[in-house]
Structures are given as structure tokens and as C-alpha cells.
Image (cartoon, rainbow, N blue to C red; front, side):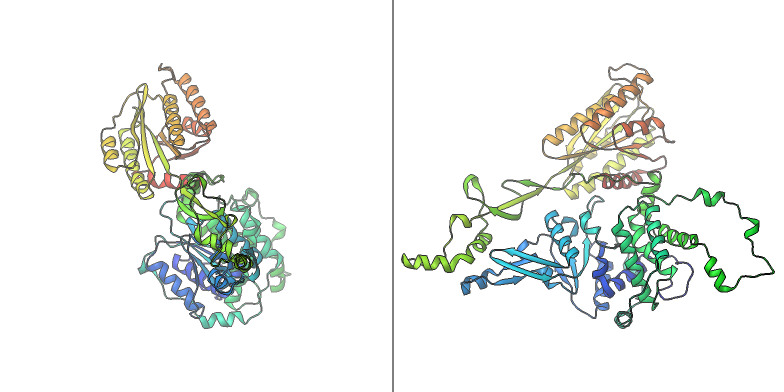
Length: 595
């Protein structure tokens, strides 16, 4: 690996740890200017080694830590309840965001961060300051810091809020990194101190245009991301000791910022492939161009290709596989409701409070009630002294009622083609995928159901359950062979999904079939009518608004399966060579992309 600063015309392949090393250096150099980093990794040696390396690069300065369930009072600051009650007047307290000014804020379990808390964090990052006006206190404090969002999600669909990750220029995934792959650091605190003392590197319009072009080629429409790539390129040049951004700096910035956000593979330029070299453009021996003329005549396309190739080479393997499975492009979808936090009246996790009374069994938030009453104690005590009373005075208008949220449960409904058109081997792989995903759902306390369809009927083999024993028993007895009543299966899946939704859960449907229906809705044979009925049932499923995925289990991708997936508005995944583990991984990725 060539560290920033080495002379190179191309960016060499970077190991995951080397990418993490460079990200830590950029964060320690000027992390606030690029927002920070989203770090997906479980608690373990690799993550702790990276955090320790970041601390060492910052000269051992400690980082502020923000828990996922933090309240507004601790996050933003406001009224110091103890001091206010003791002194009889409002006393301000600095929040965590103000304490992190000039440093690094580590957000623990960022995937569980409340949407409202994430919004307040994003607002503080955008403004560089936060103004608190609550409980009679008005306080404005600077909040310029870098964020390290620790993503500890087990499932593929557990991700931090998009509003937060969009503001973090860098994304790291150390999930599969072993402690044996940790390499000696390239940067240290002394080299960063020297880089901070240099004048900020400049970047020309051509390089900026190349980074923007690469972002568009990778399907990234956010101008914020392109701007982040420009800032990272300038920091990389500063690390290398350059006064201006070089092509290799821009290429490395594209690999760090653009590659993890790619939604499509770059499309080769047909014009470039078809273009023939013109004879008159060849250099003439009698007038050889000078070195300066060669540099001036160098086509800007060379830098475009270098930046784009570096970004393409750095696309994570899992993302690249997903892009290829989707035909080179993933579809952007609105965030779904699977597993999200939903409001509940009297149970769940306390996420705040509101003014109210205790009627209807509401629970009093004692601390917030005292906060509301504290600023008025001097006035109330003077009034109470005239009546001969003393002590803390709390009135009805001070009451604050606790607000709750609880996580909605998700049910993944597998609809498996057990007909003769699906080979028994594919049926065995479907069973294996259900077993793998059931284990993951058990960790998340989600449910799994199984519908098998063959001959002229669709049968609920496994009702929604978390029981591993019941699942194993149902899967072991799953029969195979017969015709393909696809329309009946889609309608049965829609009915079961509707029943799941009525119970407050969020259903996600996974169809595993080759799409070649030959039994219509009335139970009669006939491929044409059966396909028509299947398409009509698929459109009805789409009208219900359910998340759906269709996995084509045939040896070769079938157009009928693709048509069914399009009609139901779901993702189509042709997996002719997948085993049980491959099916499980594909379903996890597809569910994450569709939610």
C-alpha cells in the first residue's frame, strides 16, 4: 500500500485495515470538516484497536461518548436541577454536544438512535452551535465536532438513521476483520501535527468535476457526498505534504467516500469504445511536443477514468454482489416500518415526556416534573410564605407525563414452491435458508412463517412463530411434487400478511419459485390462464403495500418470475447457483435494501 504522500499514478489495492488507518488519520486531522465516520463492527479487538489508534492520533485526548437512549436534557443541556433547587434561581448546565466541541463524539449503538435524537445531532453538526431554550434558560454554545457512529446491528436491516450517515463522509465495515489482520499504523500524532501546520491544499475545478462525474456514474445523486469527497481529497493531500490535490489524492478520496455509497456499477462509455484514433493526431517527428505541451494536451478523461476506477475497485464485496444481482443497480426505496419504534400508550421504553395530567393511568415523569417546577420556586415560596407554608411547591401545570415507544415486531413469511417444476435440491436449499433466517429472527425476536404450494392448493405449513423446534418439525415434513398454483399461493400469502399486520407486526414476504404457474385460481390446468391469474394476484399484493421479494429458484432465470416480481412491486433475485447460505445472505441484503 502506498500511503498518501508517495508518488503513484494509480491508487493500489487497500486492505480493510489500511482504509481504516487512513480514515482515523483524516478524522484526527480535521474530522469536523468531513462530519465523521460510520463504523459498522461488533464489539471486539478490531474495533477497540481502531478506537485506540484514533485516540493515539489525537494525542491521547479522550472522546465523548453518547449512549443511544440519551435524553434531551443531557444531550443539549438546559436546567441544572440540583443547583437550581439549591440556589432558588435557574442555573444552566452544558450538554454533551457542547462538551464534545473541538473533539470527537462517539455514538454508541447508532442503529438504535431515536429519530428525534438523530435530528438534533444533525442540526448541531450543520449549524456548528446549539441554542437551548427550555425551563427558563436560553443558552447558545459551539458544537463543532466529529462523529464516530458505532453501528452494532446484527441484522442487515439494522442501520443508523440515513440523515446521520449522510453527514458522515467516511464509512467503514470491520465486521469480518480479524485481529490477525491488524497492521502497524502508517500515521502518528507527530506527522498529523506537521500536517495541521501546513496551508490547506488547493483543488482545481477539473478535479472537482471529476469527483462529481464519478459520483454520478456510481448512482450517487447527493451533492453533499460530492462535496465530502472534495474535502477528503484536500485532507489526503495535506497528509501527503502537497499544497495542491494530486490525481492520486482524488482517486483515494473517491475510494473512501464514493465507493461505499455506490448504487450502480459504472457504465462504460460507448463513445470511448467506438472512437478510432485519428491519423492526424499522431505526433509528428519534425516537431516533437515539449513536456509542458504534453501536460497541457493531456485529455481530462485520464483523470476521470483514474478516479472512477479507484472508486469501483473499492466497492465492498457485499455491495458489489448486490449490485450485480440487481443488474448493476439497486433501487432506492423509502424507509419501511420493519422493526421500527412505534408509539405505545403505557408500555415500552421511555423516550421523553409531555405536559399532561395523571388521568387514564398515565405515568408521572418525576424528574421532568421537578425541572418544570424549579424555575418558579422563588416566586411560589414568597407566595407560600405569606400563607405560612414552605417546601417544594409543585402545581398541576408542572406535571410531565412519560412518553413510551416500543419496537414493532417483524414477521418474515416464506412462500415456497414445492411443485414438481422446482427440483428437490432447490426445495432443500429453501429449507436451509429458512433455518438460517429463523435463527437470525430469533435473535431479533422476530417471527417466521412458511407457506408451501403444490398441486392445487397452498398450505400454511408453519404459522408465524419464533420456536426453533416447531420450525424444524414443519420443515422436515415439507412435501414436494405436483403442479404450481402460484395465484393461490400469492393470495394465501397476502391473507396471512394481512393477519400479521392486524396484530401490529410488520410482514415481509419472500417468494421462492420459478414463476411457471400451471394451475389457475379455480384449480384448473392451463398455463396461460394460470399466469394471468398469478399476475392479477401479484398486483393485488402490491396494492396492499407489503414488502415482497421473489427469488427465482430455476436453473436459469425465468421471464415469468421477473414479471411476477414486477407486478407485486418486489425485488427480483435470480439465484441459479445459490446454496442455502447464499439464499439466506441474498434475502438479508434484499430485505435491507427494501426497507
